[in-house]
Length: 426
Ligand code: EPU
Image (tube, rainbow, N blue to C red; front, side, top):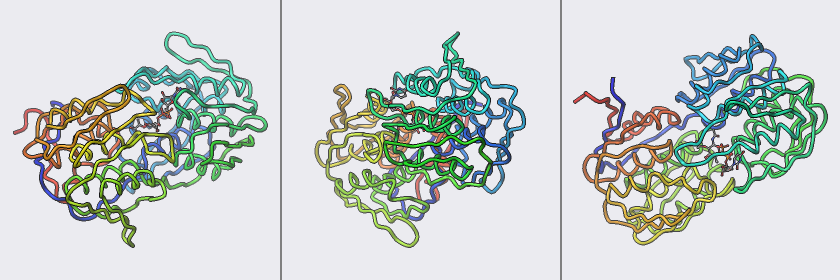
């Protein structure tokens, strides 16, 4: 069977209601945190996406049962602690595998985790993850591409977890998970404040951890002897919600977004309103509608509560069609602009200057075959395809399927002309 792609005929105005799935980036670290727990963990609203399957596969190799249930939940239960090796084959597929490092070390006293390599949007170091484990008293060594780490028992400490680009989301998650079972008190200074980190902290607290300050740059953890599994519901995916809000705006449509936390999207909604897209809370969810003519605006990605890098590509697709020039600056991943050349293939007028893209609005995008490169860049191409004149083929959609649950079905249900095909089909 060939590689799957989307065939989109642009121009339909989207109307109706879209229901948002559980957040991939909250689900992944919370699943890894099951390694810390005794007994059964049941997680509700686990999104049905490929990255979750990859992590479930990794957890199984680490002795943890991971079973998806038909109601969208997942049951996790550690049965054996014999193997603490996260091999390259799985880690290279998904960088988030690094978040088993903290739990393995804290619970089993040892971890061997393959170093994740670069990714489509550049160099992505893990130095802060390693620093956090060392601060907690672990021995860490790099050998043959693997991080080898051991400890008798982690010890609480004060750590500063900032790098050249500010705080780290998964680095904070790793440090927090490891510190829950460390002896004594840990303070993580310059902790990431993202809602996914807060969700992880809330899960750990429900398991018996003593954590305060989650959602602020200073997290305080008092180590405990053990964590017990619990039942927990994952927060809605703010990035999926933002992507569908742009789907409404870019097609001049009207969508109600259900299962959406507006308090996680304030910076994004602020930029939407600057370009003329209205969002209104209703009883059913968030109602999104847009002006016929979009205004240009400037946006800079930042750590939470700033504008999320994971929505940069999608907003750029919208700005392509604004009436004037916009400036998009990337402050988290300066090379995360693989969508730029592809959007230009569709008639956009984008010029990259270092970590900044100058967007000159055009009247119309035109359908073309384009190549998905990473998850969010691919979503931007789908959005552009929904608005473009004619047919767009988005190739390599396995990137999209890593992180969006049933994207084409959800879009089709609100009126998009989109089909998932594989090579060889007519
Ligand atoms: N960084 C370091 N050293 C480290 C770790 C990070 O310098 O040890 C730098 C990174 O290079 C980057 C900045 O710190 O410049 C922030 O990266 P962060 O560590 O916060 O990224 P992450 O935790 O690896 C998560 C999400 C990403 C999202 C980023 C930023 C998951 C599974 N991934 O990655 O999501 O873009 O935070 O918000 O939670 C996506 O879903 O498409 C995605 C890429």
